[in-house]
Length: 434
Image 1: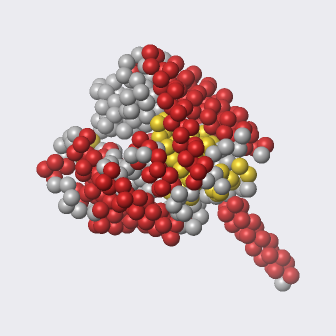
Image 2: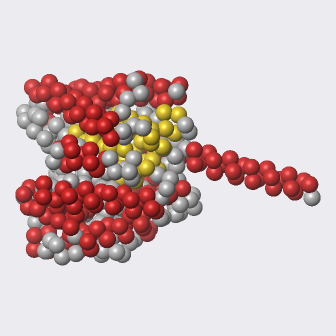
Image 3: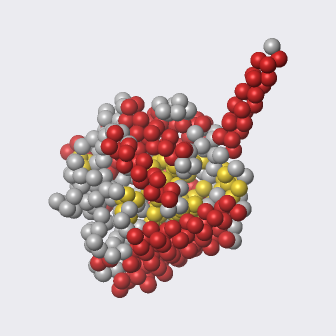
Protein backbone atom coordinates (compact mmCIF):
# COMPACT_ATOMS: atom_id res chain seq x y z
CA UNK A 1 0.00 0.00 0.00
CA UNK A 2 2.77 2.39 0.94
CA UNK A 3 4.64 1.46 -2.24
CA UNK A 4 1.59 2.28 -4.34
CA UNK A 5 1.16 5.60 -2.56
CA UNK A 6 4.83 6.44 -3.12
CA UNK A 7 4.50 5.63 -6.83
CA UNK A 8 1.35 7.75 -7.04
CA UNK A 9 3.07 10.69 -5.33
CA UNK A 10 6.04 10.35 -7.67
CA UNK A 11 3.77 10.25 -10.72
CA UNK A 12 1.84 13.30 -9.54
CA UNK A 13 5.08 15.15 -8.85
CA UNK A 14 6.42 14.38 -12.32
CA UNK A 15 3.15 15.50 -13.87
CA UNK A 16 3.21 18.72 -11.88
CA UNK A 17 6.79 19.40 -12.88
CA UNK A 18 5.91 18.79 -16.54
CA UNK A 19 2.97 21.20 -16.36
CA UNK A 20 5.17 23.78 -14.62
CA UNK A 21 7.89 23.36 -17.25
CA UNK A 22 5.36 23.72 -20.05
CA UNK A 23 3.76 26.79 -18.47
CA UNK A 24 7.13 28.36 -17.78
CA UNK A 25 8.26 27.75 -21.37
CA UNK A 26 5.70 30.11 -22.88
CA UNK A 27 7.10 33.38 -24.20
CA UNK A 28 6.08 36.24 -21.90
CA UNK A 29 6.02 39.95 -22.69
CA UNK A 30 6.42 42.69 -20.11
CA UNK A 31 7.78 46.24 -20.08
CA UNK A 32 9.12 46.16 -23.62
CA UNK A 33 10.85 42.79 -23.49
CA UNK A 34 10.31 39.05 -23.89
CA UNK A 35 11.26 36.24 -21.54
CA UNK A 36 11.18 32.45 -21.50
CA UNK A 37 11.67 30.54 -18.25
CA UNK A 38 12.20 33.93 -16.58
CA UNK A 39 15.21 34.61 -18.84
CA UNK A 40 15.44 37.34 -21.51
CA UNK A 41 14.44 36.14 -24.97
CA UNK A 42 15.85 37.71 -28.13
CA UNK A 43 15.68 35.80 -31.40
CA UNK A 44 16.64 35.57 -35.04
CA UNK A 45 13.85 33.93 -37.03
CA UNK A 46 12.52 33.58 -40.53
CA UNK A 47 9.25 33.53 -42.43
CA UNK A 48 8.33 29.94 -43.23
CA UNK A 49 4.68 30.64 -43.97
CA UNK A 50 4.29 27.60 -46.23
CA UNK A 51 5.64 25.09 -43.68
CA UNK A 52 2.16 24.31 -42.37
CA UNK A 53 0.99 23.50 -45.93
CA UNK A 54 4.13 21.64 -46.93
CA UNK A 55 3.81 19.14 -44.09
CA UNK A 56 0.55 17.67 -45.38
CA UNK A 57 2.17 14.75 -47.21
CA UNK A 58 5.07 12.35 -46.66
CA UNK A 59 7.48 14.10 -49.03
CA UNK A 60 6.64 17.46 -47.51
CA UNK A 61 7.17 16.16 -43.99
CA UNK A 62 10.61 14.88 -44.95
CA UNK A 63 11.51 18.29 -46.37
CA UNK A 64 10.22 20.04 -43.23
CA UNK A 65 12.38 17.87 -40.97
CA UNK A 66 15.50 18.58 -43.04
CA UNK A 67 14.77 22.28 -43.15
CA UNK A 68 14.07 22.60 -39.42
CA UNK A 69 17.35 20.83 -38.68
CA UNK A 70 19.13 23.21 -41.05
CA UNK A 71 17.60 26.27 -39.40
CA UNK A 72 18.39 25.14 -35.86
CA UNK A 73 21.97 24.37 -36.91
CA UNK A 74 22.23 28.00 -38.00
CA UNK A 75 20.64 29.37 -34.84
CA UNK A 76 17.29 30.33 -36.39
CA UNK A 77 14.67 29.28 -33.86
CA UNK A 78 11.57 31.41 -34.50
CA UNK A 79 9.24 30.80 -37.46
CA UNK A 80 6.41 32.94 -38.75
CA UNK A 81 3.69 30.71 -40.20
CA UNK A 82 0.42 30.89 -42.10
CA UNK A 83 -2.45 29.23 -40.24
CA UNK A 84 -4.72 28.51 -43.19
CA UNK A 85 -5.95 29.49 -46.64
CA UNK A 86 -9.41 30.95 -47.31
CA UNK A 87 -10.96 29.78 -50.57
CA UNK A 88 -9.30 28.33 -53.65
CA UNK A 89 -8.43 29.18 -57.23
CA UNK A 90 -7.62 32.56 -58.76
CA UNK A 91 -8.12 35.77 -56.79
CA UNK A 92 -7.06 39.24 -57.87
CA UNK A 93 -5.64 37.68 -61.01
CA UNK A 94 -3.21 35.32 -59.26
CA UNK A 95 -3.21 31.68 -58.25
CA UNK A 96 -3.46 31.56 -54.48
CA UNK A 97 -1.64 29.02 -52.32
CA UNK A 98 -3.28 25.70 -51.48
CA UNK A 99 -4.77 23.58 -50.01
CA UNK A 100 -7.62 25.57 -48.48
CA UNK A 101 -8.65 25.42 -44.84
CA UNK A 102 -12.02 26.88 -45.87
CA UNK A 103 -13.34 26.20 -49.38
CA UNK A 104 -16.84 27.57 -48.89
CA UNK A 105 -17.16 29.99 -46.00
CA UNK A 106 -17.62 28.35 -42.62
CA UNK A 107 -16.81 24.82 -43.81
CA UNK A 108 -13.42 23.87 -42.40
CA UNK A 109 -11.27 21.00 -43.57
CA UNK A 110 -9.81 19.92 -40.24
CA UNK A 111 -7.40 17.53 -41.95
CA UNK A 112 -5.54 20.46 -43.55
CA UNK A 113 -4.32 21.52 -40.10
CA UNK A 114 -2.56 18.17 -39.69
CA UNK A 115 0.36 19.83 -41.49
CA UNK A 116 0.48 22.53 -38.82
CA UNK A 117 0.12 19.82 -36.14
CA UNK A 118 3.17 18.06 -37.51
CA UNK A 119 5.20 21.25 -37.89
CA UNK A 120 4.46 22.43 -34.34
CA UNK A 121 5.33 19.01 -32.97
CA UNK A 122 8.69 19.02 -34.72
CA UNK A 123 9.34 22.60 -33.64
CA UNK A 124 8.62 21.66 -30.04
CA UNK A 125 11.22 18.90 -30.22
CA UNK A 126 13.77 21.51 -31.30
CA UNK A 127 12.77 24.21 -28.80
CA UNK A 128 11.58 26.49 -31.63
CA UNK A 129 8.81 29.08 -31.35
CA UNK A 130 6.03 29.84 -33.85
CA UNK A 131 4.23 33.09 -34.65
CA UNK A 132 1.04 32.17 -36.51
CA UNK A 133 -0.89 34.70 -38.59
CA UNK A 134 -4.60 33.98 -38.72
CA UNK A 135 -5.58 35.63 -42.01
CA UNK A 136 -4.14 37.96 -44.65
CA UNK A 137 -4.64 41.48 -45.93
CA UNK A 138 -3.38 40.23 -49.30
CA UNK A 139 -4.89 37.90 -51.85
CA UNK A 140 -2.30 35.15 -52.09
CA UNK A 141 -3.91 33.12 -49.31
CA UNK A 142 -7.47 34.35 -49.82
CA UNK A 143 -7.64 36.57 -46.77
CA UNK A 144 -9.82 39.65 -46.47
CA UNK A 145 -10.69 39.76 -50.17
CA UNK A 146 -12.13 36.26 -49.93
CA UNK A 147 -14.27 37.16 -46.91
CA UNK A 148 -15.53 40.24 -48.76
CA UNK A 149 -16.44 38.15 -51.79
CA UNK A 150 -18.13 35.45 -49.71
CA UNK A 151 -20.28 38.12 -48.07
CA UNK A 152 -21.35 40.01 -51.16
CA UNK A 153 -19.05 43.01 -50.84
CA UNK A 154 -17.01 42.17 -53.95
CA UNK A 155 -18.88 40.68 -56.92
CA UNK A 156 -17.45 37.72 -58.80
CA UNK A 157 -17.24 39.91 -61.91
CA UNK A 158 -14.25 41.80 -60.48
CA UNK A 159 -13.07 39.34 -57.84
CA UNK A 160 -11.11 37.19 -60.29
CA UNK A 161 -9.46 39.91 -62.36
CA UNK A 162 -6.38 41.88 -61.39
CA UNK A 163 -7.44 44.95 -59.44
CA UNK A 164 -5.41 48.12 -59.71
CA UNK A 165 -3.95 49.61 -56.53
CA UNK A 166 -6.76 52.11 -55.97
CA UNK A 167 -9.42 49.41 -56.45
CA UNK A 168 -7.55 47.15 -54.05
CA UNK A 169 -7.46 49.90 -51.41
CA UNK A 170 -11.16 50.67 -51.84
CA UNK A 171 -12.19 47.03 -51.59
CA UNK A 172 -10.00 45.69 -48.78
CA UNK A 173 -10.84 48.68 -46.60
CA UNK A 174 -14.48 47.50 -46.59
CA UNK A 175 -13.51 44.51 -44.42
CA UNK A 176 -13.53 46.58 -41.22
CA UNK A 177 -17.17 47.63 -41.64
CA UNK A 178 -18.43 44.27 -42.92
CA UNK A 179 -19.89 42.58 -39.84
CA UNK A 180 -20.48 39.29 -41.67
CA UNK A 181 -16.83 39.27 -42.83
CA UNK A 182 -15.47 39.98 -39.37
CA UNK A 183 -17.72 37.31 -37.82
CA UNK A 184 -16.55 34.75 -40.39
CA UNK A 185 -12.95 35.68 -39.56
CA UNK A 186 -13.71 35.11 -35.86
CA UNK A 187 -15.05 31.63 -36.62
CA UNK A 188 -11.80 30.72 -38.35
CA UNK A 189 -9.83 32.10 -35.39
CA UNK A 190 -11.89 29.97 -33.01
CA UNK A 191 -11.45 26.88 -35.16
CA UNK A 192 -7.67 27.26 -35.14
CA UNK A 193 -7.04 28.47 -31.59
CA UNK A 194 -9.32 25.81 -30.07
CA UNK A 195 -7.72 22.95 -32.01
CA UNK A 196 -6.14 19.90 -30.38
CA UNK A 197 -2.94 18.72 -32.07
CA UNK A 198 -3.57 15.27 -33.58
CA UNK A 199 0.05 14.24 -32.99
CA UNK A 200 0.69 15.40 -29.42
CA UNK A 201 -2.98 15.40 -28.30
CA UNK A 202 -2.21 18.78 -26.75
CA UNK A 203 -4.45 21.77 -27.32
CA UNK A 204 -2.86 24.56 -29.32
CA UNK A 205 -3.60 26.94 -26.48
CA UNK A 206 -1.46 24.73 -24.19
CA UNK A 207 1.46 24.37 -26.62
CA UNK A 208 4.60 26.30 -25.66
CA UNK A 209 5.94 25.86 -29.22
CA UNK A 210 3.55 28.67 -30.15
CA UNK A 211 4.86 32.10 -29.20
CA UNK A 212 2.03 34.26 -30.51
CA UNK A 213 -1.15 34.56 -32.50
CA UNK A 214 -1.10 37.33 -35.10
CA UNK A 215 -4.33 38.99 -36.23
CA UNK A 216 -3.34 38.84 -39.90
CA UNK A 217 -0.47 39.32 -42.28
CA UNK A 218 -0.04 43.06 -42.80
CA UNK A 219 -3.54 44.27 -41.86
CA UNK A 220 -3.94 47.81 -43.23
CA UNK A 221 -6.79 50.31 -43.07
CA UNK A 222 -6.00 50.88 -46.78
CA UNK A 223 -7.80 54.26 -46.72
CA UNK A 224 -7.52 57.04 -44.14
CA UNK A 225 -11.31 57.01 -43.80
CA UNK A 226 -11.14 53.38 -42.58
CA UNK A 227 -8.74 54.10 -39.70
CA UNK A 228 -11.39 54.31 -36.93
CA UNK A 229 -13.00 51.00 -37.95
CA UNK A 230 -9.56 49.44 -38.43
CA UNK A 231 -8.46 50.42 -34.91
CA UNK A 232 -11.73 49.08 -33.50
CA UNK A 233 -11.26 45.77 -35.33
CA UNK A 234 -7.70 45.37 -34.01
CA UNK A 235 -8.92 45.92 -30.46
CA UNK A 236 -11.92 43.59 -30.78
CA UNK A 237 -10.02 40.82 -32.59
CA UNK A 238 -7.19 40.86 -30.03
CA UNK A 239 -9.66 40.76 -27.14
CA UNK A 240 -11.45 37.82 -28.73
CA UNK A 241 -8.24 35.81 -29.09
CA UNK A 242 -7.30 36.56 -25.49
CA UNK A 243 -10.74 35.34 -24.38
CA UNK A 244 -9.99 32.00 -26.06
CA UNK A 245 -6.33 31.62 -25.05
CA UNK A 246 -4.71 33.04 -21.90
CA UNK A 247 -1.30 31.45 -22.53
CA UNK A 248 -0.08 33.01 -25.73
CA UNK A 249 0.93 36.46 -26.85
CA UNK A 250 -1.13 38.38 -29.41
CA UNK A 251 0.19 40.88 -31.93
CA UNK A 252 -1.01 42.72 -35.02
CA UNK A 253 1.20 41.70 -37.97
CA UNK A 254 1.33 45.39 -39.00
CA UNK A 255 4.11 46.88 -41.15
CA UNK A 256 4.58 50.18 -39.33
CA UNK A 257 3.55 53.62 -40.55
CA UNK A 258 3.92 52.53 -44.19
CA UNK A 259 0.88 50.32 -43.60
CA UNK A 260 -1.03 52.28 -40.96
CA UNK A 261 -0.95 55.71 -42.66
CA UNK A 262 1.06 57.32 -39.81
CA UNK A 263 2.98 56.62 -36.61
CA UNK A 264 0.08 57.71 -34.40
CA UNK A 265 -2.09 54.88 -35.73
CA UNK A 266 0.81 52.47 -35.26
CA UNK A 267 1.09 53.54 -31.63
CA UNK A 268 -2.67 53.44 -31.11
CA UNK A 269 -3.11 49.83 -32.22
CA UNK A 270 -0.07 48.63 -30.27
CA UNK A 271 -1.06 50.42 -27.08
CA UNK A 272 -4.15 48.22 -26.82
CA UNK A 273 -4.06 46.15 -23.62
CA UNK A 274 -4.54 42.89 -25.52
CA UNK A 275 -1.69 43.52 -27.96
CA UNK A 276 1.48 42.22 -26.32
CA UNK A 277 4.15 43.51 -28.70
CA UNK A 278 4.66 45.64 -31.80
CA UNK A 279 5.65 44.52 -35.31
CA UNK A 280 7.12 46.20 -38.36
CA UNK A 281 7.98 45.06 -41.88
CA UNK A 282 10.57 46.73 -44.12
CA UNK A 283 10.36 46.53 -47.94
CA UNK A 284 12.90 48.72 -49.80
CA UNK A 285 11.82 47.43 -53.23
CA UNK A 286 8.08 47.83 -52.71
CA UNK A 287 8.52 51.26 -51.15
CA UNK A 288 10.72 52.63 -53.91
CA UNK A 289 13.94 53.02 -51.93
CA UNK A 290 15.81 51.72 -54.96
CA UNK A 291 14.87 51.62 -58.61
CA UNK A 292 17.94 50.38 -60.45
CA UNK A 293 18.30 46.69 -61.14
CA UNK A 294 21.84 46.63 -59.80
CA UNK A 295 20.61 47.70 -56.33
CA UNK A 296 24.25 48.60 -55.57
CA UNK A 297 23.81 52.17 -56.79
CA UNK A 298 21.08 52.74 -54.20
CA UNK A 299 22.36 50.62 -51.33
CA UNK A 300 23.40 53.64 -49.25
CA UNK A 301 19.86 55.01 -49.45
CA UNK A 302 18.40 51.58 -48.67
CA UNK A 303 20.57 51.32 -45.55
CA UNK A 304 19.80 54.88 -44.44
CA UNK A 305 16.03 54.50 -44.94
CA UNK A 306 16.01 51.12 -43.19
CA UNK A 307 17.88 52.44 -40.16
CA UNK A 308 15.55 55.44 -39.92
CA UNK A 309 12.48 53.23 -40.18
CA UNK A 310 13.77 50.99 -37.39
CA UNK A 311 14.68 53.96 -35.18
CA UNK A 312 11.30 55.66 -35.60
CA UNK A 313 9.39 52.53 -34.66
CA UNK A 314 11.73 51.59 -31.84
CA UNK A 315 10.97 54.98 -30.30
CA UNK A 316 7.23 54.46 -30.84
CA UNK A 317 7.45 51.02 -29.23
CA UNK A 318 9.22 52.54 -26.23
CA UNK A 319 6.42 55.06 -25.87
CA UNK A 320 3.81 52.30 -25.63
CA UNK A 321 6.18 50.09 -23.58
CA UNK A 322 6.01 47.12 -25.96
CA UNK A 323 8.80 44.99 -27.43
CA UNK A 324 9.37 45.44 -31.16
CA UNK A 325 9.88 42.64 -33.70
CA UNK A 326 11.13 43.33 -37.24
CA UNK A 327 9.21 40.38 -38.60
CA UNK A 328 9.60 40.88 -42.35
CA UNK A 329 12.56 42.30 -44.23
CA UNK A 330 13.95 41.26 -47.58
CA UNK A 331 15.91 42.26 -50.66
CA UNK A 332 16.38 40.68 -54.10
CA UNK A 333 19.62 39.06 -55.15
CA UNK A 334 22.27 41.19 -56.86
CA UNK A 335 21.18 42.71 -60.19
CA UNK A 336 17.61 41.77 -59.21
CA UNK A 337 18.25 38.24 -60.43
CA UNK A 338 16.00 35.26 -59.61
CA UNK A 339 18.75 32.74 -60.28
CA UNK A 340 20.49 30.88 -57.47
CA UNK A 341 23.74 31.45 -59.32
CA UNK A 342 23.47 35.19 -58.69
CA UNK A 343 25.40 36.62 -55.75
CA UNK A 344 23.75 38.11 -52.65
CA UNK A 345 26.27 40.82 -51.74
CA UNK A 346 23.69 43.63 -51.41
CA UNK A 347 21.23 41.41 -49.57
CA UNK A 348 23.92 40.38 -47.10
CA UNK A 349 24.83 44.01 -46.47
CA UNK A 350 21.16 44.84 -45.94
CA UNK A 351 20.59 41.89 -43.59
CA UNK A 352 23.59 42.98 -41.52
CA UNK A 353 21.89 46.33 -40.81
CA UNK A 354 18.86 44.62 -39.25
CA UNK A 355 20.88 41.97 -37.43
CA UNK A 356 23.20 44.62 -35.99
CA UNK A 357 20.18 46.56 -34.73
CA UNK A 358 18.94 43.44 -32.94
CA UNK A 359 22.35 42.57 -31.54
CA UNK A 360 22.87 46.11 -30.23
CA UNK A 361 19.42 46.03 -28.65
CA UNK A 362 20.12 42.75 -26.88
CA UNK A 363 23.45 44.02 -25.57
CA UNK A 364 21.72 47.09 -24.15
CA UNK A 365 18.49 45.36 -23.06
CA UNK A 366 16.70 47.37 -25.71
CA UNK A 367 13.22 47.37 -27.19
CA UNK A 368 14.05 45.45 -30.42
CA UNK A 369 13.59 41.84 -29.37
CA UNK A 370 13.56 39.80 -32.56
CA UNK A 371 13.66 39.69 -36.35
CA UNK A 372 12.34 37.30 -39.00
CA UNK A 373 13.84 37.62 -42.47
CA UNK A 374 11.63 37.10 -45.53
CA UNK A 375 11.81 34.39 -46.49
CA UNK A 376 13.25 30.91 -46.12
CA UNK A 377 13.24 28.99 -49.41
CA UNK A 378 15.09 26.04 -47.92
CA UNK A 379 15.68 23.10 -50.24
CA UNK A 380 13.10 24.33 -52.74
CA UNK A 381 14.22 25.62 -56.12
CA UNK A 382 12.57 27.78 -58.82
CA UNK A 383 11.37 25.60 -61.70
CA UNK A 384 13.05 27.73 -64.37
CA UNK A 385 10.00 27.24 -66.62
CA UNK A 386 8.35 30.52 -65.64
CA UNK A 387 9.22 33.22 -63.14
CA UNK A 388 5.83 32.75 -61.45
CA UNK A 389 4.66 29.70 -59.51
CA UNK A 390 2.59 26.96 -61.12
CA UNK A 391 1.00 23.88 -59.62
CA UNK A 392 3.63 21.18 -59.19
CA UNK A 393 6.51 23.62 -58.67
CA UNK A 394 8.44 23.64 -55.40
CA UNK A 395 6.89 25.90 -52.79
CA UNK A 396 9.30 28.73 -51.94
CA UNK A 397 9.30 31.70 -49.62
CA UNK A 398 8.00 33.85 -52.48
CA UNK A 399 4.17 33.69 -52.69
CA UNK A 400 2.57 32.90 -56.07
CA UNK A 401 2.02 36.53 -57.08
CA UNK A 402 5.76 37.26 -56.77
CA UNK A 403 8.65 36.14 -58.94
CA UNK A 404 10.00 32.83 -57.67
CA UNK A 405 13.44 33.45 -56.20
CA UNK A 406 12.77 37.16 -55.64
CA UNK A 407 13.35 37.26 -51.87
CA UNK A 408 13.87 33.60 -50.91
CA UNK A 409 17.00 32.63 -49.00
CA UNK A 410 17.91 29.09 -50.04
CA UNK A 411 19.93 26.56 -48.09
CA UNK A 412 22.71 26.95 -50.70
CA UNK A 413 23.16 30.72 -50.11
CA UNK A 414 26.44 30.25 -48.28
CA UNK A 415 27.44 33.87 -47.64
CA UNK A 416 24.02 34.77 -46.26
CA UNK A 417 24.08 31.82 -43.87
CA UNK A 418 27.60 32.68 -42.74
CA UNK A 419 26.34 36.16 -41.88
CA UNK A 420 23.19 34.90 -40.10
CA UNK A 421 25.19 32.30 -38.18
CA UNK A 422 27.69 34.90 -37.01
CA UNK A 423 24.87 36.85 -35.37
CA UNK A 424 22.83 33.94 -34.03
CA UNK A 425 25.86 32.61 -32.18
CA UNK A 426 26.20 35.94 -30.37
CA UNK A 427 22.49 36.54 -29.84
CA UNK A 428 21.68 33.01 -28.68
CA UNK A 429 24.85 32.95 -26.62
CA UNK A 430 23.85 36.08 -24.75
CA UNK A 431 20.37 34.58 -24.18
CA UNK A 432 22.04 31.60 -22.51
CA UNK A 433 24.25 33.80 -20.30
CA UNK A 434 21.44 36.04 -19.05
